[in-house]
Length: 171
Image 1 (cartoon, rainbow, N blue to C red):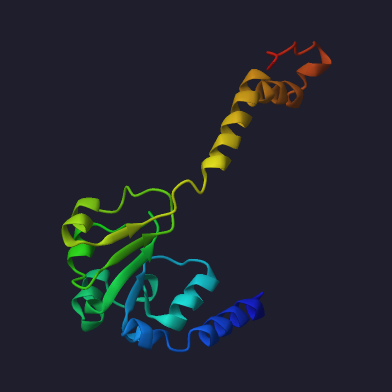
Image 2: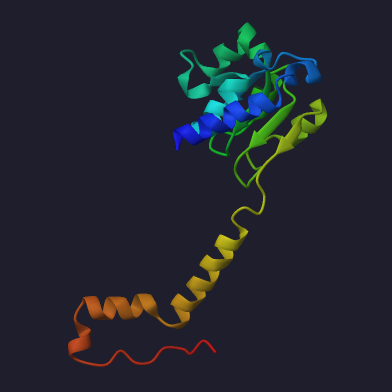
């Protein structure tokens, strides 16, 4: 699997050897703050193209780190809702341009502060919609067909003495 990811990165570089010239910036000079561990492929990809800071590897507190010159180079924050991006974090990153959240919610991102500073916000909406619908149907069936109650009935041995009885028919 690692070889496949490595090949993909090489191909991308071969396709865009002048990407920095096209964009007019040195990609490695762009600081990206990753707030929590993520997929190894994503981390490797970000490390290949950007100056990646992994918050969980910082020797100092986040407050101390953000006061350094390195904190001033951060133009993107990548994370999830575990830590979030609050007013303090956003205000302490003067070059911040985008907050990319790889989870569904936006509840731990200060959207007002982002809007005030012109910071783009991205997340992954609807990625779990079908799974939630499946779970809802499963729960409905479980209740109507009395799955938990019948399971307990069998486990405690009552099935030996009496029938459990019929459950509600779904259709």
